[in-house]
Amino acid sequence: MITISEARKTNEMIREENLDVRTITMGINILDCADESTEKFCAKVYDKITKKAEHLVKTGDEIAVEFGVPVVNKRISVTPVAIAAAACKCENYVKIAEALDKAAKEVGVDFIGGFSALVQKGESESDRKLMDSIPEALASTDIVCSSVNLGASRSGIDMDAVRRMGGVVKETAYLTRDKDSLGCAKLVVFCNAVEDNPFMAGAFHGVGERECTINVGVSGPGVVKRALEEVHGADFETLCETVKKTAFKITRVGQLVAREASQRLGVPFGIIDLSLAPTPAVGDSVAEILQEMGLEYAGAPGTTAALAILNDNVKKGGVMASSYVGGLSGAFIPVSEDHGMIESVEAGALTLDKLEAMTCVCSVGLDMIAIPGDTSAETISGIIADEMAIGMVNNKTTAVRIIPVYGKEAGDTVTFGGLLGYAPVMPVNRFSCAAFINRGGRIPAPIHSFKN
Image 1 (cartoon, rainbow, N blue to C red):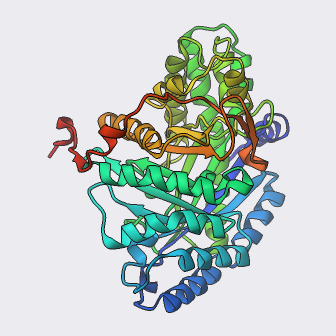
Image 2: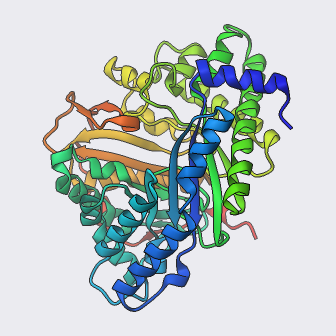
């Protein structure tokens, strides 16, 4: 049970430090919707989603009011469509994406994820259909999110898929050019993707999951920053203990909301994802936490070490508060969604190369980064390949959500709005990697993957 003292402190964190439950995400298995007819498959998927998630938004809103905890987003994830739709006899999966969009809007959620494929060891015909459908699917829908897992520590990296996805990102940017290439904000590629991630754009309902689950993502960068202000200048042991204790408190809030949502919806509870996911609001920034640790700007020497401390101790505090901490728990470092990161880029302290180094120790990877619209598909594939290699060798989840903004150059600014914020367009290395990317084939798993 949460004590009166904990409740009082929680109210303070919500009121003054931007603590929120970032998302309640319902995962839905759609494998039983399989059908050779695309129309019948879409109808089955629509019916199942609208039935299972009928009360999701209402329940989230009621919990927010009753417990006084903001529940910012309600979302749905489904089984990767490339798996569930493999029996469909059709040229592409755009109609399926549109059916997902329609179902999600019917139940009132903010996003639906799972227009996804898992190709870490090679592509099936269904995987290729899905990847080729992504640009048109994201251009013709509003709240559908797409992801592709390109590598894994036990499987290596599918470089054919890496090459393909560079072109997919470019085409998605072009087809959504009237919205500053916003379609790319709904597309992410992974190495070592997890099956219970409640955060978009990478959420999907893994094949090892139950029929339906509730996963909750909690976020509180402002809470951590305020706690560190109270021990300003203290040694590293004190700093680490402070982060752990704060993460414990944040996770307890998520545990309460998750259990309540699970009980009211009659859906099994999955995991709590304690990820410090920032917003564009001042005071709700991971970069500002790093600055409170003693850095002038995020990106200064010592940034990677500071981020490693933050990420590790967030996880340590979270696992003490709940037996089911999962997802991507740790610290996210998106540029456009983090006021402090944006300031660091504008000051010249934070570059794409430094962000890549930081991804070695953060929760995910290169996230919500705007780059010039004329960046080549091969260069985008090269950036993806670098990030996949970091994940594969270090046995961690890494990802790339990068936005080549059509018509924009380095130094320009692009505004996405809402939680997606705005971002300075960052320069990229202009030297070619085309010959490397065009080799094709698969990079084998590293030697330390053989653990049996």
